[in-house]
Structure formats: C-alpha cells, structure tokens
Length: 237
Length: 167
Image 1 (cartoon, each protein chain N blue to C red):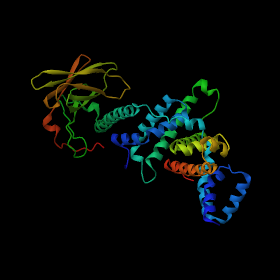
Image 2 (image 1 turned 90 degrees about the vertical axis):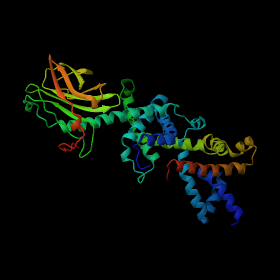
Image 3 (image 1 turned 135 degrees about the vertical axis):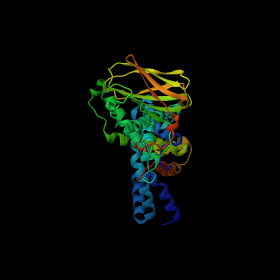
Image 4 (image 1 turned 90 degrees about the horizontal axis):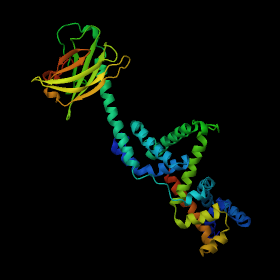
C-alpha cells in the first residue's frame, strides 16, 4: 500500500461513515479497511457522530443560536438574593422557636415580671435577646425576640391563649419613658406563625417592650446588661 | 468550584452555561418565555442544592443540564395538565427529551464547526445533493468536498465531546 493511497482512503472515511460513497468506491475502501487498523479506528470514531446526524434539523442549524434575554441573569440573581434573605429569616425563626418551645405558658403565675435572656447558639455571643412576659393571665403566653438592626429593632412576637382576632399593638419604651411604636398584629387561633414587627428605637436604648391587647397592657423589661453574657448556655440547635 | 452555594458562584455558572441551557430549553419547550422560566428555575434549584454538587462526580455543565432536564419535564407536565393540551393524553416521557438533548447537541455542534465544513455537510448529507454538484457550485474539486466531509465530521465529534458527548 502506498502512503498516498492510505491518505486518500482516510479522507474518504467521512463519506463512507455517512453512506455517501458510490458502490465501487465503497467496496474498494472496505477492502482497504480489512488490512488497515488505523483507518478502522478512525472510522469507528466517526461512525458515532455520523449516526447522530439524522437527529438534527437542518433548518435549526442554520438559524442563529437562541440567546437568553440580556436581563435574565440579573433577574435570577435578584430572585436568589430574595430567597437567600427569606432563608436567613426562616433559619433564625427555627432557632428561636426551638429555644422557646418548651416554655409552659401557665407557669407564668408569678406577679413579678420574669425576664429570660439566653445567648443564641452554644457559647456564641449574639446581641439578640428573648423576652417572656410574665405578668399575664393564666393560660396566656406572650414572648418576643428582639434583634438590633441599623434601622432600629426587629421584633418577633409569639402569642397564645388570647381570643382569636385580638388586636395586639406593640411598642418599645426607652429609659426616659418615651414610647416608640412597633406596629400591630392580630392573633389568630391555629396560626402558629409569629408576627414580625419593627421599631425605630435602637435595641441598645430600649428599656421596656409592651403589648396593648384586649384593653390591657402587658410589659416586660428589656435588659441589655444581660443580653450579651453567657447566661444559661442552652444550645438551641 | 467545590459547591454552588454562593451567589457569586451562581453568577459564574450563569455566564458560562446559560447560553447552552437556554438554547436547549428553547429547542425542547418550543417557547422563549417558557425557556426563560426553565433556565431561571434551573439556577434557583442549582443554588438551593448547591451543597450537593460534587465536581469529583461530574462537571458543573452536566449537573446543570440534569437539573434543566427535570425542570423541562416538570414544565411539560404542567403544560400537559392544562385541559386543552391534556386532550391529547400524551404525558411527556423521558425518552424524547433525551433525544431532544442529543438533537440539540448535534445542531449546536454543527453551528460551532467552521463554515466550510458546515456548508458541505448540510448540502451533501442533509440535502442529499451529489458531491459533484456541490463541488461545481463551490468551485472546488470533488476531492475537496470529500475531505471537507471527513474533517467536518472530525470537528463535529470534537464539538460534541466539548458538550459532554461520549461514544
């Protein structure tokens, strides 16, 4: 076999793989393949894609490739950022719930205000603090978690044992007795989600948190002095 | 990239793979709006499951296409469950989607190879025109057409392999 023949045969392998060679050339190339391992190997590597070609639609090949709209990436980023923020809130909520879940509302019969301040996470120093309103009627439970933010204080309220539909108005009060509204919510039976509220008063300046509900006002002290210490060391995770 | 958990990772993955993912989504769903929805959902799911992506197991591209495939199936089902479409009673099955992915890969690979090779493969194979006729039209010897078919197929194979194709 001459080298040039081999090269010529090799260049015919594409047409052979696609079944385009006239019968006489096809037979001659088949004879060459019998004795040429290199061409047989090359043919095998072309046959795979040649077999897939019929799947393609020639009209689509000649169309320009479809491109996503220019703003799709930004839209996806925005959606992920929103999901990310939502997930962060849910994680915090789960964490707080676990820490408060074991509390028995009816235990709060003492006439004094009890303040529970726990660090969030085992040994982790967190500026967030939990508050339980102790001066409430039997069967009623009011709890809150407070978190400092640049805008003021984020407040999550957990209420149970009061009449469904009761309007609850929440406020923070500073050491001088000045009141800052934290908004309002309605308690609904069967709805275990807490109310998310916010107040413009910085947590570091808040002395009291209060709730007006059903013609009564319940308050609990907010104590920064104990907010940052180790406390009971309960691991809520 | 060890996992796809940071928003920056998603941005990089988007710039590297969104074109292909969108191209396949348009090809399989036949609708640009649905394709956008599919790509958006794909990256959202990828981000949510980012911890599960393991580059030791497969490429990011392969992983994203696997997610897109599921999204396309879900969107196809949602569309099929609407009464007007459901009259046909055809649940989109997995097989045509795998075939659609292969078909799209071949079309995409054909777009990526050189113009000379693409032209010759289109005329001789897809339009079944004789080599001599195409040679005369292009003003080249017939042997050149044959060699372009050969090198065109080789280039097509390389382009397919870049998209994850294996024999």
